[in-house]
Image (cartoon, rainbow, N blue to C red):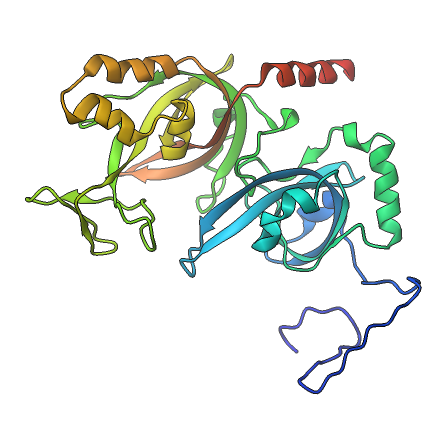
Length: 362
C-alpha cells in the first residue's frame, strides 16, 4: 500500500460479486468523513499533496476549454472561488460535465465540501477538484459556514491565495488583488523562480501599441480547426499560394490569422511593456479579428490609414489586466517578459462602488 494515501484504518473492496442495497436511514449517519484544512492554512501544504476543503462558493467563473499537454485532448473546466471563515479565499478548478453545470449547481453561494483536492502552486496556491464534491453536506461545518456567511462573511475582504492568472482564467481580478504596475520591478516579479512565472493584476491603460510589423500585427496559423492544430500552429506559404503546416502535415488553400504584438501599459506608478495574443487583442479591438483587419486593409489594396486608425482607437482605453511575468533568455541577455493573460474593460459603476466600500472601512 505504498501509494495509498487513504487515512482510514479499514477499507472495503467492491468486486463483481458485491451487492449494494439502498437503506432509507434517518440521516443520523454522516454521509462522508472529512479531514478539513482551513483555506488560510493551504499555504503550508506542499504542492502535489491532497487535502479536504470546505467553503462558500463566492464566484463561479466562465466555462473554458484547454488542451491537455499530456494527452492532447480538449478538457472542459470552470474556476470557482471558495472562501471560509479563516479570512482567505482560493481558486478551485472543476472539470468535465460538472464544469458545464457549475453555474446552476453552485448558484446562490452554497457551502461545498471538496474531498481530496490536489493542491497546486499555480498563481500562489490553487486547487484542482476530483469527482468527490458535496454541496451543502449534512455536517456541522456547513451550518457554521452558512451562519458566518449570512452574518457578514459575504462582505468581508478575504486574502486571495490564488492570483487571477493562477487557475482563474476569465475572472475579473478582485479589487484587493490588484497591485500597481511598479510592483513588477519593486518585487522582482519573474525573477524569483526561473522555472515558474509570477502573476500580477492591475488597472492600467495602453499608451502605445506596436503595429508596424511587416505584413500586419499577426501571424498565419493553420486552417485545420481539429487536433492537433486547432488553428494555433504557424504555417508557411508555398510557391503555389497554398499554406503548409509542419504540425499536421496538411496543405490548405487558406490560413487563419491570429494577432500577436506588443504595447506599453501605464498607471500612475510606472509603464511596462506587455505582449498581447489573439484573444486579448480581439478584446482590445472590440471583436475585430485579424482576418477581418487583413481583408479590410491588406487584401485588395494597402489602406495604411484604416489600419492605423484601429490601433489609435484602442489606445488610452482602461482595462483590468491579469499578466504573467517570467524571465526569459534573449541571446545571452536575461529579460523579464510580461504577457497579458486576460483583460476586462473597467466597469466604472462597479469600480466606484468597490472604492467607496474600501474607503468606508478605512
